[in-house]
Image (cartoon, rainbow, N blue to C red; front, side):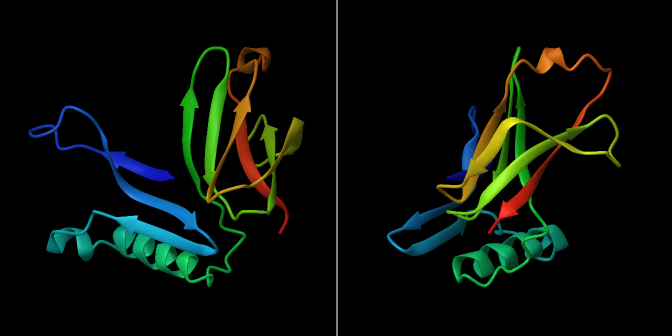
Length: 142
């Protein structure tokens, strides 16, 4: 599953996958093509990505409280939220008017992961008749 895409505007006209994760049988695969420059490999964000990817591939990423949303794609009238997940684990999508809550689960917003990334379509996004709305993904059951 692609986790990130990028392109060099001087060379490419389309985005290319640069970070990915998948399962192969019972094994886990994490890969990246990033890291060809000293400025990249010394960057703390890159080091965190590499560390967490390797820990996940080895089954040693125990930090389940730190879920990572990888993208939110806005389409009318729906939105799609994607996040890093653990196959077999259950997640709930919640919403609130304010970042501090109170948080409420969306209707039918329980997802059991089948791969290393999961997605949920927030349907009829326009029905939230507020100037802003916050969404989060919460681990329901490991």
